Length: 410
Image (cartoon, rainbow, N blue to C red; front, side, top):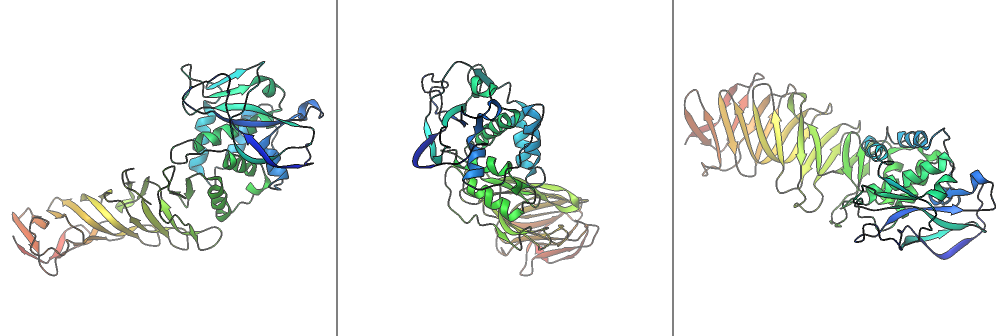
């Protein structure tokens, strides 16, 4: 067991690369550090820095796993994310699946450092060695990770899995939306996953952990949301508000997600990277069900379907009832098509309300009384184009047929 005997207040710990051999020469390597204590027995000689810091600096109680292979340990560690953050668990499993084929083992070499660790601590009588190096872009041979085989061979499967998980977390951290420049957040998250804290972690504590780690995306109540503006540092309010420790009240949606549409269908929500700032605010009821989505993008295509109608909305607000059924969509523009009619509004102010069945209940074309080209309805069976009056709305029965029409001919 490694014991903390001193803190080195100005120690610069690095995650660097093979400085003498410039793999992927236009990039800086990022890797995992291992504490080497020769005085310990052989199977306790090496410990991944993340676990040491978790125990001695963060004061976490470790909850380590042993197995016949490091792959088994790694799989079980990733499983700890499944319930609270399934999207991240799937991402890490995909990285783990290709870890060995993307790894190059190097023996008989000292891996040198490129400092980017920040402050740290070491046990007395031990030294820090570079166990692994990772590059954003794989080599020509397809190698993304370079591992010091001499260190790897001296590690037990628990430590090997911890080193592999460090690289997997760092791989996510190197994505543009995260833009990691140091491994501080990687070590924090890896150490937390290896601790008893994960046994009964609340959603609120997990959100705080991911915020502290610096990663952007997280799953909240079935939706992927983001906690900061990404590698480009887009400004905005990314606050996550809670009803209690397990239920979120308000968050910011990721740029590409799916939200409920009428008739139990799913509608894509897409906000392109050209739109700056938080993509959309999502609100929840106290039972955790979606309540409202307020897009902030200049253009969001929101496709809707019901039993006999279909259409497309550029929405600036979508509302749901307490069971998660869409009740209304307010739009910059929309078009709704039905066998008997076509509705179109091309300016802000449109509104479509829905029955619980998903059929349209009411369509409000918008307050454009003199703009016949911007807001109109066409009734095919009479061949007549109509423009908005002051009341300017259409009411439907639950089969989708018009029962009241407040328009005049164009």
